[in-house]
Image 1 (spheres, one colour):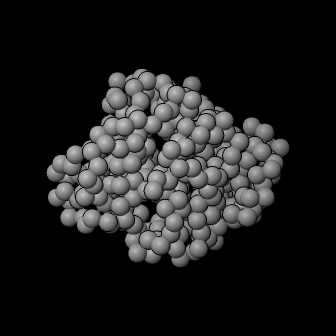
Image 2 (tube, one colour; image 1 turned 120 degrees about the vertical axis):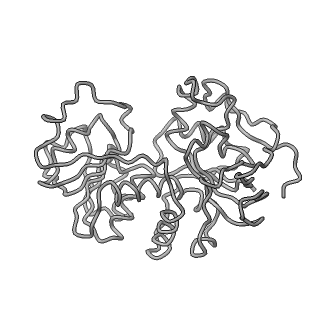
Length: 327
């Protein structure tokens, strides 16, 4: 059990740039029934947190002040009545984390048992930095591929916007499953790494695939509404497109006409990563261990260097996942 009374954390009340993101001393959360206190050992940076700092913080549904962070890994410091044990390795993600209740940009995080998942034996020897890059990214990739796209080894998968943490994870998983994988990127210098992660073909994305011979039975759309209709135009009959990402910065499709804009005999779905389960996390960690795959980590920062990590996130131009660890 933690005997600390205060901890370092990023607590925000309004729009916060990387330059403004200074750690503060705040009280360590007090445990309560149904919640466990976790000593945070690492967390990945996500686009959702960037949007929170840029604008979403102004929304009425955001608790303020709020500690951002929609995912994290660590050790149970105080199990309360959860049935967990002190020292258990766990991951936590989503379900209001970092929006409705304080998230992982801190030394400690109080987590409801519904959002706290044991890290299985097969993955417990992984470094904290590696574990920190898995929960949200791999859960979103896993759910998109298997729940959204019903991916099979016989499929050809198109990953639109593959040169991001989620994209690399999806390429890895699909390749390990036995699929043929086509990955798009807007930067030619990312092609080599995408091939290393399992892409059979890499296409330079100029905003349209009209001049390419790309055709796929399944498509994971990570750029979002900006390229969704173009992506769907390259589905084979019976194909499915899962819209999961919003890298293109456009959140909705104005004037979207489902009858005209969804090609005949093709299907459109999505994946919202707000409902993880222990069963899903067990499958993900087992798959990662069995196939010897792992996250593409662009850079690891210390908690004390959080503002530097956020600055890199804001500037872009990196490949993979940014991770923050805390000793």
